[in-house]
Image 1 (cartoon, rainbow, N blue to C red):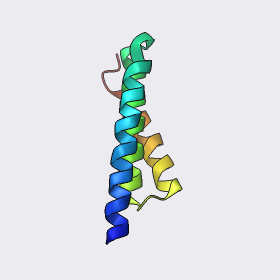
Image 2: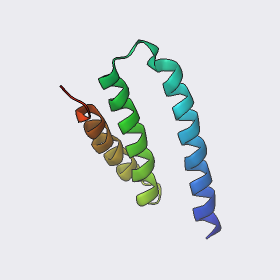
Image 3: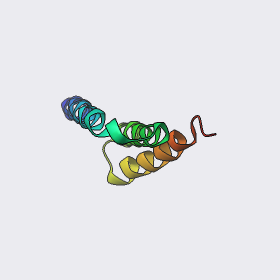
Image 4: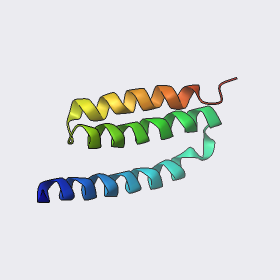
Length: 75
């Protein structure tokens, strides 16, 4: 149980760091590019949590989240 709590804290800290970097890097991006990046980040964190930190789950979540983020508000 302790391992799971440590993993969740690590993932949370990584998500916070990633969000901070994303905000700094997004100044020249279009809204669709921002949505794609945010979707990929959220998907990666979600995939990691749902699969207990597996690389495949993290990458799969990032891919699915990126696609969903890209399609949001698409005109």
